[in-house]
Length: 453
Figure (spheres, helix red, strand yellow):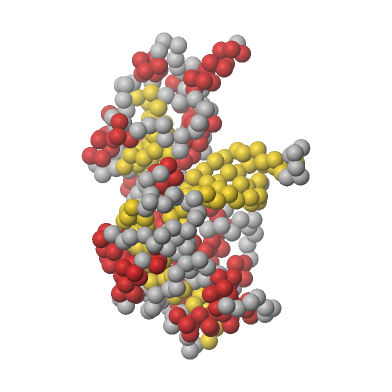
């Protein structure tokens, strides 16, 4: 189905590693970073999850033209964007995790902006959807009067679910459901936490149901959810018991599953039950950390032929991602770029320059490693699903055979100058860049090794 996700966009930056000692400067852990990932947050995370489930998603938001916004566009590759312009910086939330446990979060660019303007494309995307999710993160898109009118009109014809924020807008009239968590419900209701009834959630849900005139579903974390229908009382829907150290993204997974179930014709209690179990399964499977690597479809996983993998993934309706380069003396910058590329789709194919091709591009002293070794090293990475070698100076011939949905290069490339961009666009594909890894290059590594030798 076609789902519109309306809301605020954030860029999430995840730094993950191990902490085995305290700093000598202060009693704080020293985290040795092993992985750095960027992903779409806020409404973007909701959209990314729904797209991964196979739904047609249009994301209705605003985007600036700064570096984080460009990273967001790359993270949202394959999702239709109906985004107006923004003069405000893109919010970036950096989370540091050690052994899966959150240590600290840094927020940048999160000052409260002015109410953004709505474009014709944004309003049309709302009007054309089969279901709408409002993911309000307090950035004022949900306060735009044109957007609110469009949502009210849409709520008369199909399910509109509103996931509120304490600093956000009051939901519009006629919604199928509003989904605050317990603390948000207490704040909106002006209540205080008490023992019993979900810590005051039942009274808060009743107050909000009366004030907003709609069903209220209060999410209770590991305790499940509380459903309150105006005039119909409250009902607790428990969650399965799971173990998790990071609940990030569970609310986004919940609201997406709820909207899909309601749009598919399920009654509200059934839809809430399904959403609770979907969110629990999401956390049990690793939560947001698992979003960085989607496994191959089963039919493709058994094949070792990269072109066969491409054909099978395409037949299964998956997204094919490709990247290319010399990949001589594989280093951390390569690995991070490849991980980011793999997160954009259902398979990653690397188009690798042959030895002669590398020599023509880099000079007589390169490559340091022969093609067989470079191929074996790349294929050993969990984020790479296949490697194809090309003899020419550019990968155009192989690209025309693979025809990827997304062509990925590092952020040090200018997409407008890439010779592959026009070819990729000819079959409807997209060229994107992923964050450039500063101070990591094969040339620098080769020079350092020469000094050691």
